[in-house]
Length: 187
Image 1 (cartoon, rainbow, N blue to C red):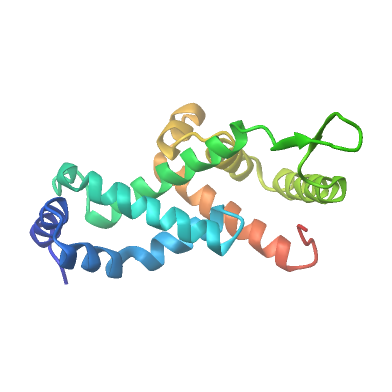
Image 2 (image 1 turned 135 degrees about the horizontal axis):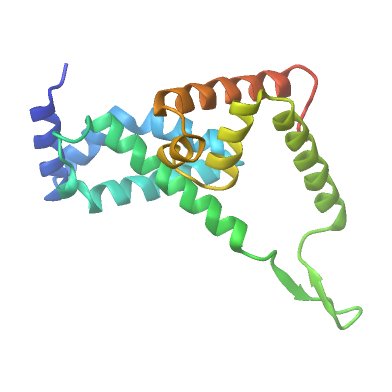
């Protein structure tokens, strides 16, 4: 079992570029970081890219880790969550790629219309599933995943304890997974 002092020494070694320390950090937390990324992102490849970016950010900010403020796992997961939210925000703010349509001389989307229809239907099905959740679970999921607020911000907005918001998020995501597995396929 590692102590806060062990975690602090590990992060200090990571900050100096100690390859063994980076490998130890990766071995300890990469399964959890990947699982979190995969729950949010659409493919394994995208999740793997996110994990690499997260570990780069962990290495760059390792000297800021303070064991008096948080356990190492909490710090790693907070950084992971922030990175994933930033990634989703960047994706949402990008317009779809466009290219010149040589046959008509105009501008056309690089994605075929059929895939846009399929994505639209999946979005509608997901929205319908979210709308079927109890109000607190629905609000927490909408605000944290779709609007990008932190759980602390959501708790403040809803005037609810942070633990209640975390529980509502967990229960809501579990219900969504169950709904998508039991016939209401999202795509």
